[in-house]
Image (cartoon, rainbow, N blue to C red; front, side):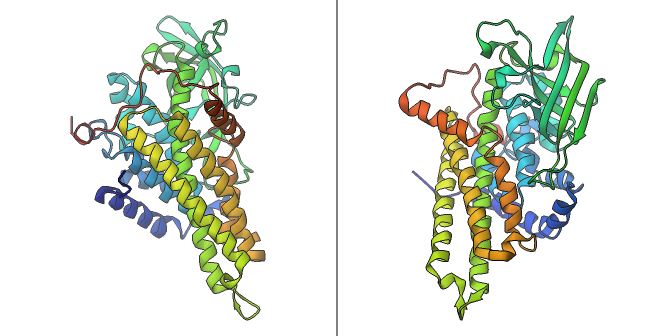
Length: 404
């Protein structure tokens, strides 16, 4: 096994780190306090090629592999979760789904402008009364000639008010014997008649990010915008979550690192009883646990990224990477506040924002409890992953980097 990153990996990592340090660090506290997304973030990420980092060049992307996507998410969330959320939604939950499930026409129409950053994408699965129980959703799509008519509401949708395209999953066959056959996925153009959106304020964390709702009232979507086959929506949604969870796990790894770096710096600066607090064993213990968590989380997401590169099903491996990293990031941020003492309780230091941001990731993309049950199911033999009609394509450098 080769744990070395390539020169390309390191170059992208350096580029993203410099972007966040120079352009995001000076303003992120201000926007977090205002609960407002900086208007320059999406255009700037598009300009740098981040919004299509692992999409083939022929489809408007940069042609890097899935490990590069993980490294990018780690760097982005090491600055602020807002940045990684953009990648989770635009890339993990939407663009990669079109790459996996879309027709060539859909890729040209939707994936190319998304990969170039000319269009922004979001993903609609959660509803006001439905979270983990995906098959229990009530938003519907009914066939009418060559169109589908969509009605219902999606809630807690990142980039809802910023997106040009939404990948949504709707109830199309409520009478199907297998609940997994009841849903179908659609690509919705957000300027369609009957689509309305709004922002959600008052969130605990990711306050500099855009979170909202989408309502559909008799929205007509052509059958050409149906992603996959009718009744495949549940399977498509689960494959989207495999990709989204990968970005979340990689991002949470960056948050652990940020908590560690902040704690180390403060432990050297702050003195108590005549010596810097880093000399005290209980402070060292907290920092040691952060080091351990970071190294473990990083290895777990890199393994999942390697499996994606090979085109191997990675639902189990991505689940455990997401579960471990998000729980560990919440713990690391909490311990970082403890290291900072009273100052950690104020927004003078970044660690209080890290703690607020870290909480969301143990809920979305499958709660920690869901992932515990998944891992127990695999271990006990109760859970087995069935084949998908289309797996995420394995990374092929020649194809990924070849212009059409």
